[in-house]
Image 1 (cartoon, rainbow, N blue to C red):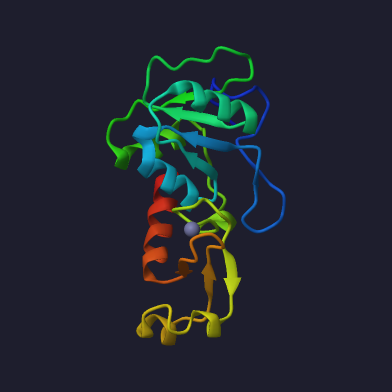
Image 2 (cartoon, rainbow, N blue to C red; image 1 turned 45 degrees about the vertical axis):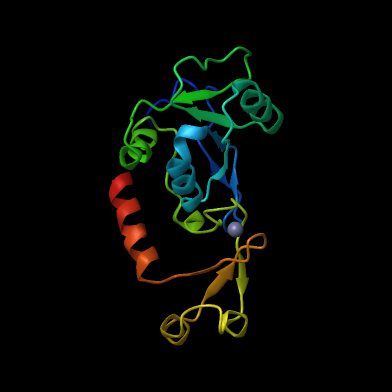
Length: 177
Ligand SMILES: [Zn+2]
């Protein structure tokens, strides 16, 4: 076991699944305005991740404190001011490499059960829905090919385990080595 990232409290695992599908305990994130793509990727992995679009850092820090979130930022001026502040500065400029950076820094790890458990847009846990409920709301060729569908309770977007997810899963597994 390698030591946890220095921004994380000692001895605390980066996450601990509680046995319920899609639930990740412990590690919640708050990505700042520069890190929208990273926020979506973290949601894809199942991490509870909020995305803060504002420019002022005070509301960002306040929200992170209130909800016990780790701030992810590109801003070098954002530094912890209280013992409970946890801030991970993302050094990588290219969105494609930022997830890799968090993996290398041991900030995140892979729990396959949590993959694709959240809406990429809303951060909500997806509800499994019946095939009948998906009929007419997904392309016909998808509907006839697949059995399992899920839906975001907030934006009502429908997700399915198709070739795109299989492709993403392989990419993610590669990233985590
Ligand atoms: Zn949604």
